[in-house]
Each structure stands twice: as structure tokens, then as C-alpha cells.
Amino acid sequence: MTNSTLSIQLQNQTSSSTVYAYITGIDASNGSFVLIQADGHSTYYPQSPSSVGSPLAVDCGIKLGAPGSSTPATIPQMAGGRIWFCINNTLTFLLNPGPGLVEPSVSNPSDPNYSKTWGFCEFTFNSFQLFANITYVDFVSVPIQLSLTNTSGAVQNVPGIPSGGLGTVCSGLQAQNAVDNAGWNQLIVNNSSGQPLRALSPNTGIVMNNNLFSGYYANYVSQVWAQYASNQLSVNTQAQWGTTAASIQNGLLTFPGVGTFAQPSAADIFSCSTGPFSAASWPQANTAEMGNLTARLAAAFNRSTLLLNANQPDGEVIASYYQNPVTNHYSRIVHATAAGGLGYAFPYDDVAPSGQAGVAGTVSDGNPEVFTITVLDP
Image (cartoon, rainbow, N blue to C red; front, top):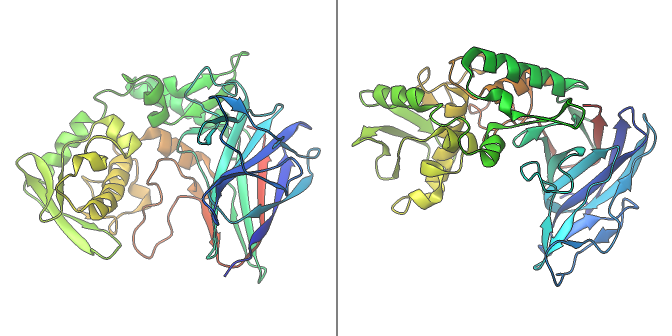
């Protein structure tokens, strides 16, 4: 059983004396939106406003100290938590009736935060544990590092992408586009000076341009379908359903007695949640088990390992990820840039062989004492 609150440290390792942090989430005790106020400790529960796009009633920008300093804060038990950082500016959060919290967006050019330098990490803090991860699911911009110390003094670290890592990622995207001309360079968003502001994930890129990567995975998916028309694919659900087998029947990847998957598009693969990976396409199926299978299939498609390994995910080898010319090169480049290859680069990047460490870049502990989040220069 964890404590009702947790001490955190917000470290400024940028070169800027103007860095703000914001902490948002859902209060685990009552399900309400909660933000931490500018003092780093007081909670703020927004009330439903009368109109869309209303400002917050209180200041929730926690100003960090000078470069090299650490600023303390306290969080209550929260679900869906995020710790945001903005360098050289403040972030704008708005409220819609509900209330609904309008968070900064990298896919809406009219968002007031669109041209600012910011990023976030994610966490859940409940009565069982603190669980946190650095995330590149939507984009890469501000490097963030995590460190978690438990009550016994044991420490977990996720260094993430280093300072200057954004440039490395953008160079990798440009180099890949020079190879296949698939549009990887279109994921780079520059600031007004022409320097990289962020690199979008392909899923976010498609949100902004739905023609991006159209047909990209078509030949690879056709090869997968051909292979499993005469071979069996086994998927360990790593849950109560155990391992279940599938093959192509009547043009569908069929898990007998469970459900079927049609051929996914690139947009379906990158999002992991549309087309055959959407619950709306499983009306006849065991929805919970299909969602579990979706995670493992989507991970294998993003990593392009289905032609190599018919036992997912237990037969997976990290060195075999992203080796096919058609793959999620954004994820490949992010993992190559991040320290130890650790970072959450697509929605199911936490899928891993049973009993083996994954590549998602997470920290967790049932007895957390201090959670340290460090922000670096991009």
C-alpha cells in the first residue's frame, strides 16, 4: 500500500532559466480532473465553465529554478497523469464544459502551444504502485529523464533521448526518406527559424495529413497474409486466454472461436486502434481477448517481425525488430537514439516476450519514495 501522496523532484538540466512544469491527471479517489497549482503542492479541481475554451481559474505553471536546480512538488494518487515541461515559455491549458481539460496539441496548428518547445512524460500513482514512462508515441521534442527511488533505496533510471537527440531523430528521418521516399521527412516540424521543433510519430503525421504513408504497408501485409494462409500463427495473450492460434481463412486472419482481423492499412498499424484493430470491427468477438491480440499483432506489424516469427511475442528477439525495409522507421530511429534503446514509440511498444524486459522505458515500484523527472535541452 502506497502513501496518499508522493514527493517528486523537477530538475532543470536545460540551459534556460525559464522552464515551467505542469502536472495533470485524474484524481484516483473521485475521478475528477486535477491539476497541481503553481506552488507545486496545492490541488486544483476545475469546475465546468459556461463556454468552450475557457481559461483555468488558477495558475498551474510550476516555475523551475535555474539550470542545475531541483524544484520539489507533491502529487496525490492520480490516474492518467502527465508531467509537462515547456522551455522558454508557459503552456496554455483550457477548459470546456464538463469540465473537459483541453491539453496542448501537436496536431492542431491553431493550438496556442503549437509553436512552443514542450513535452511530457506519463504516470499512474495509485494505492498499489507508481508506474511511469517516457513517451514518444505522439512526438519527440524535449528530452525527459526518469528516476525512481523506493523506500529501500533501490533506484530505477530511464535516461531516454539525450540532449540534442531531437536533431539525431530528425537526421535519421531525413536519411530514411532519402532511401525510400515514403514521407518520413514530413514528420519533422520546424520552428520559425527553420530549426527542428519536434518530430511527429507517423500516427500523428497521418492525423495532420491523411494521405501520408498511404499504401506503405500494403506489400508487407500481403506477404504476411500469404505466409499464414498455409502456416499457423501462434499468439500468447499473456493473460487468462493463454496461447491461441490463427491462420488466413476467407481472406481474414482467423482465431477460431475468438474473432477475425482483416488486412490493416499503414494508418491502422501506426495507430494500433483503427480498422481491424478497432473494437467496432469485432461485433461477434470476445472483445477483451481481441484487444489483447490486437496489442501483440500491432506490435509485430510496427516492428515488422511477422514474417520472421510465427510465435508472438514469445519468439521475438529485439535485434530482429525493424529489419524489414518496410517498418515503423520512426520507432526504429527513436529506439536507436534513446539510451539503452528504451522509449515508448508506438501505442503497444510495451509488448515483450514473457519473462523478458521490454523496450518501453518504464519505472514502477509498490513502495516509491522519490520520483525525479529531469528536463534537458532538445
